[in-house]
Length: 553
Image (tube, rainbow, N blue to C red; front, side, top):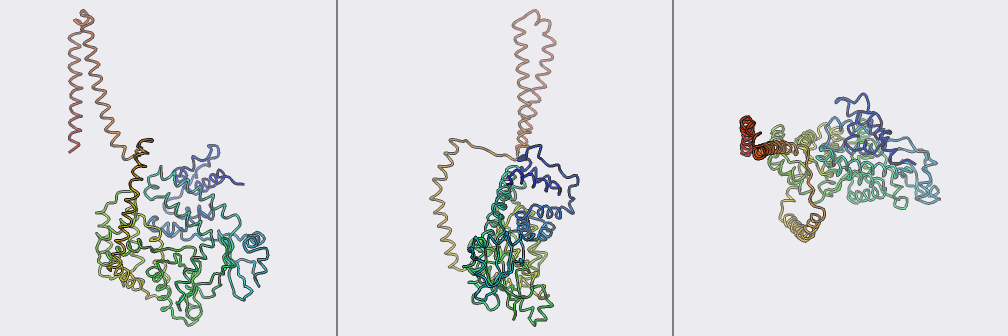
């Protein structure tokens, strides 16, 4: 059985081999290995040009948890430069198939020893094989065609071990590496761990699918597959099989006589409904998750990655849309600062100037004819440069908008994401500004204030107790210590000079009082040297004191 030590060494070896030894040191991974078991750094670290490719290769070597992490990072335009995003987007969640004789026991443990008899047909060759599970085609005895997703044996233990390691390394990096603190690597890793553990639970995906099915139950243009609850558990998910064309296969769509312009509009409208009406959206609308059924109906699958728009995010989005529609860089800066937490002081003036430059770049355009994807990418560059960090749901939402725009432009060269987005954005803004919404938000703010007031005495009491028993610990960064060190050096120099002068004066005094004969012979040279030394030291002390006073003004 592998121990954490084995996995630590494996991770370190792969990172070193791909030229990322600095990550081994910065994360504290090196400290967790005995010296004799530490791998040697690579002689050929990647250059700036090919570092993204080497990072992708390293993540692929490290296995499913790291591949999933890379896929998540590829969605975070606010954290990674475009070159890294584009490279990590190539990460494929594919794996060598596990033999059926290892998968079948999982199916029987979840659905019963007679699991195979509950299907009239079951193809044991997988349709797809991913890092978490494998997908099989089957048919129920009712005649319904289904797909059965079965979790790989042992994957939960493997993922949990990697997550424990990553959380520990992220905590160390956050305490010792300024960049990790700035980007809240520990918080990001906790968020990732929660997301991946949810993905391991197929019941969560089933709940997501059922929620989308309810939201689109009256839609003639969108089809959500049915989940068969009696054939589903946390390790097995059985749902209706959808048949259709790939959304990017424009030739086949044309041959089927389907209007691509209408298809693009329907797909975009479905995503807008999810965000602005339902507050629950499909966060991974890539071509593999979208089918074009007969008659042009859109079939959506794979609801493992979703996003939610709660009242707080809706309010933040509304404030941002108001600022964008008014082309008000000051409001845009305020909205972004409220939306994006950061541990660093934000240069608000420079942020406003950068946003003003972005507004000028697309001046003369309305939201309806704006290139949404390019504007989002430019805005992400500004956010990244100012070390701001978007909330997860906002990052997923922006990625979804970019992916939807790309898909729409493949189907219809004249497609405008801005034209689709504009009416929804305006309606959201108007809803947030109406009196009913204002009163509700005021009530929520009042409730939060009352809750804080009730908790404040206990929090203050705990703080005082901590100070009483443990004292106050102050953490200073290296750059904060530099001026303190300089000042301490000056104070130390002055103290040495003062002590030297005092010792000299005392020595002379004792010599004069203790030995009159010797004093007579040494009187002239000692007085001369003493006066010169005292004058020099006094002058030095006066000069440093004056310099310090001047430095205050």
